[in-house]
Length: 423
Ligand code: AMP
Ligand code: GLY
Image (tube, rainbow, N blue to C red; front, side, top):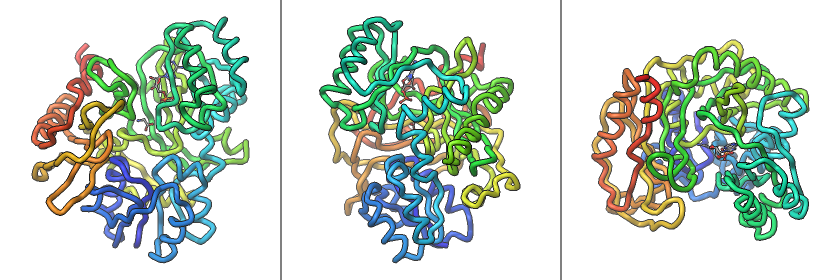
């Protein structure tokens, strides 16, 4: 089979490595991929948002199955466009991708179907939003409606910060069109859990839970990033909480999407906060999380391609999805200064492969004499082991063997999870 993966970061690298375990897979193409993915897939410089070129590529390269991994092409209808030329693809169609692409859509869905989430108000005019922040409870959270590279959310501890966030999004257009409409929501507190799930629109199978580390620096200091590391499973996510989430959040979401006439097929990601009033939805994503995928897929025992095709064909109920009982940790090595200001073009030397360890390349280009950094998040170093403690230790031990002088990593990935396990 010829497989096409659309996207080009660490998540896509992890998906490709998992797909290649299936012996029916002959060639994997990745658009645009990156210099590190190139070792595992044939990469071509077609942007992930260039839907007509992606469709053209799929036709001319006789693609049997595609995986659209990134948010923008999903929101632009890449899955619909591929399906219209007879190429089945993993991921939601344009209508269903709104669950991530529009916060207003997601919040209205949750309100209508009684799915627990933060209380909110939606605004399309800055005067009304500014008037609201004068009286709403603080802290509060200001969110751009559309896709904003994970930067559209501002947690505001004071009214002044909230005013500034509204002005930045709606008047200064810091997130472009994504911020012309905003949501202002109740501030929630509690540990965060990411749960990725497979769903074919009717059946939903949660994957192993994970914990992201969003802030740039140790001790959860510094600005929000795309994610600086992950561990799986997430020890806060007990079997009781998992059962509650299934009943009150996951299945109601799948049924709500079907009832709205936009059944969701693909990977539905639940960003949850475990508050003292129970689990609540912080965000939905219409795709695999990055870097959650880099710890979740190495623990998947079932064949990824088989599960994905079952999702696309509506056969998930009869398809086993099994996870290992081991643990995984992923440490991101980013360019110094990320996410604010950083430079690219530094040489990277990767260590020799080792059993139970993987390096997923998120941002690099291949030159004649090797790999060079390109972008903010550069590498994801994952280890799988019998316990979370060992997985964290081994991920750091392997990361230490990477030579990349402009890189930095958080030193406390997994620390909060390990503290809970030791309590
Ligand atoms: P998002 O991009 O929606 O995942 O938001 C980024 C981060 O902002 C989340 O991981 C949370 O840490 C934080 N956040 C988002 N919404 C809320 C909320 N209602 N209350 C507290 N923190 C939030
Ligand atoms: N790690 C969070 C995300 O993929 O949005």
